Length: 352
Image 1 (tube, helix red, strand yellow):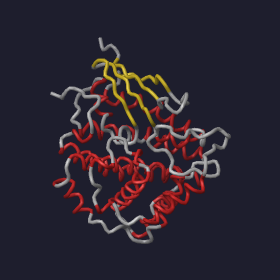
Image 2 (tube, helix red, strand yellow):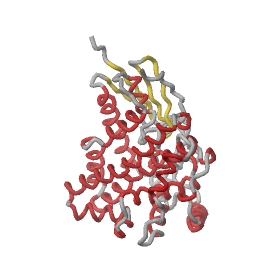
Image 3 (cartoon, helix red, strand yellow):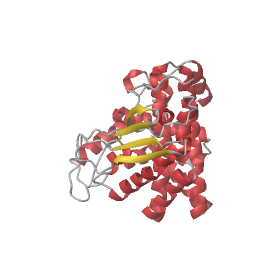
Image 4 (cartoon, one colour):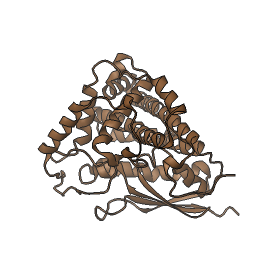
């Protein structure tokens, strides 16, 4: 019998074996999502284009880096980025545990880049002239904004990629995995899982950006919907939480339990769960990285991200039970910087 649903359950309160399972499932999801994107781009644009986009996103592929090495390089980037912007983390705090030394190499150049960019950027303005929402409570507020567009994430990622040269970082991945399985405590594992969730979701940003650069927004949006909706990436993300948490039911309570530790949900979003009864629940996103990155700066990309959620959130409910209905109670735009990002209601229809 499943334990009662705890809406405020913290990641480090999970059993150690569950956190280890979540880590392994999320690292595998990074590779699977890359493969899904590659297949979608290859079918639409050709294998040569898919190869080129993958190489631009992960230059270490040219050196023959394995999928696991590519994941660990993304992980190291996220560790570096959250050192400078810790509120990217959603289910862990950087100071709750020591980040393993293997993931925290010398990054003095990284600090210099961000310091210089902040000094240069000044006050942020959007392309439309609307003021940036300084102080907004988002979890992925861009690090730097310059010349009226959101450059921070792109600048940092490009700098990170350029710094890699032709060699993958010399991490003994098997030894690291052994420490995950046998050594690290719950608070360290919770922190590592949050890093891993961000690294996993970084994959879509790299593919989308690479496709948009070549073909524009329309093709990039078509492919992102194809990956997450048609090819099942959204369902796979929910299944990570479902299987790691041992969820076997098919009611709304089971759905919220699955969402509670899906890496593409709580791993990147600030989420509040409210279970009214086993057949009725509400999920509130207090902050959303897409909203934080794109509002007032890229209305096209923001609308597209919201459209994917409007299509994908009902599919998540139907994955557990085709009679689970989903209705958005609140969608962007936000009223002000303290407003929630969005709110979703799930109900199980009368089965009589």
